[in-house]
Image (tube, rainbow, N blue to C red):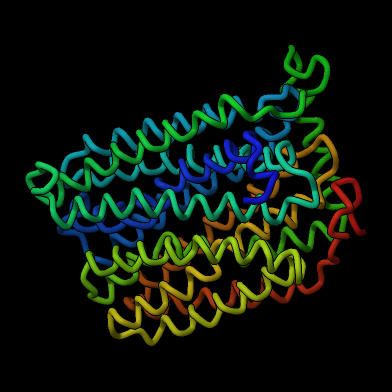
Length: 426
């Protein structure tokens, strides 16, 4: 283990990815889409259930996209990054726990709680990403960021494996049926998320806020600072191009993560086989995310991201022709090879562009773009499926997002590897 990961703050920071990734795997990508279709939307047309799921994801993404920059500005001024992370996480934990109590057919309540849980998950990530610059030096960003994602895939995958076993063999756990097992899995995610968030709460120390930043007038000052930051972002051509590229390609990544199981079900594949494929993706992604940390050091973060984008575009085009579960498993393996790398290297690349003392505020914009990248894709997939009656046609539309994002990323000037966070190329 590298020496900097032996330091307690880095491990505590990375363990938050281990904590909240249980929501990403078990709830966001795994059980919720299937359970929403088969239990809470029982009797609904499949394309209508897909539209409902897309709307729930889209609303959560839009709300957080609007709030993220302002929350980031407030957190930077008052030194509240860790406090805000814990608050948003508790919202997600509580809403996830409450999913256990939603009865069959109550799709509207399930969608509302899912939206709140996703808001809490996304809100926590805004400040988790921003704390990267508090626990690592610029030269360490690629590898520390990659280790965070790697631990996330491992932790989320371990709990997901237990949850899949609960659903496959509910009697082993004293449960009546698979539906009861799914509902108990939501409780397990909430507990897991809470417990493994505690190391970050105790051992990560953030940079102090501005003198008097948490007093009266903080909101007004933060709004003024936010407007100034927006002018800075618009004034720096390099950062603007990167954010535009990131919005497009991460939209495709997020959509595949959230809609893959729903897509497989629409093609008629067995739900348990789809969940097993998703589980396989987690354990493939664990070593692959570590590998991409090395690739970022050798080829640069942009080069690593471009490799991932190219693979995603090819896999998405291939998904149009899927006909067997074996092919779906093969697609899951390929996605696992690049998923963590694209996410972690995008975060570390952006970290080098952020000015000193503005981490949460600028990462607020970064996450704003990422959350708007959860609006277009799911809505696009849902609407195309609904209008055409073809799930295959809807998934193919995502190729355009990867292609456009990759082309724009080629225009981004790469900052010096160890140049820190003070300079942006105009």
